[in-house]
Length: 366
Image 1 (cartoon, rainbow, N blue to C red):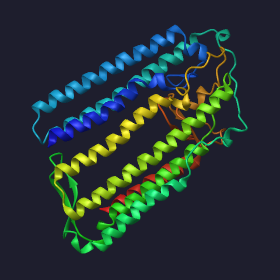
Image 2 (tube, one colour):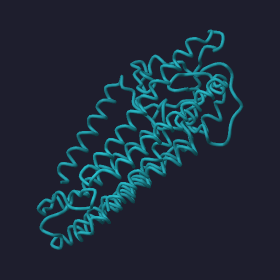
Image 3 (tube, helix red, strand yellow):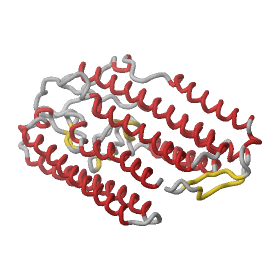
Image 4 (cartoon, rainbow, N blue to C red):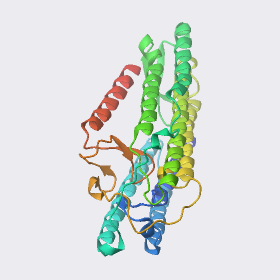
């Protein structure tokens, strides 16, 4: 059983590694390793070679880590194997951070070495009709998620007497129960509470996708606005699909409480459903790119002018801190998706409230 779980875990992590390797090819064409550049510079032979170099080195590192993990799993006993997987995940995270920082600082140095004439002053494009595009699905679609949650909760209450006296709450890698708790209304309905929190969180993300700051390429304003609208709509749809998968996962967990399914089945489903979300995210990343840059083919390469040259507000190329920007949510520079403006107190409130709500719900759920 452990080998199946370990294999699924590795398979689940491979798409993440592929996305990390491809990161510089997925970002906007006005950003290189977290540093603002012109499109002309982005497509220059030097930066093309730099992106390929990053892909080969990071790909080699992740391959070595994976091979080392598999070798160690073969020689480790069952008690040591979870620690091997944890070490592999930690090593992958450290390698990713190190690679991004190394190339970020190199890119900053490279940009500083260019003559000022090589890049014109940056400019900003604003599309006053941008919000008229359909950019997200309606939050009303989450009525289906709420319906699944309510049906699960109702069935649990109707069949409350059929739940065992002790409910399995945690399993090890072999599928054996490691923690159980006495049956109560709180524990039986715990998965429904987590579903409610997850639905609220995904609805908030959907709203954030809609309200996040517009970012238009000044060289191709109309094309950029159209791509960005499609980009947001696709990720909004992904957000709703991922939410449904997680809601169904908690319904399955509640089902297991009642019928006490075999541990191997529980482990397989618990790994397969998040793996499906990760694979979907990989597909969306490669088909859209950040801001929609991979939608609809390539545009003509722009001028030597950069977009807004706001590097000073991007700490280490990935942390946005701009007290003068009223926007709360902005697109990431490294990777796909959005981040917050950490200079805004509201951003910290959002992070703290989210953490507190999830933690409290997890406590009451089990």
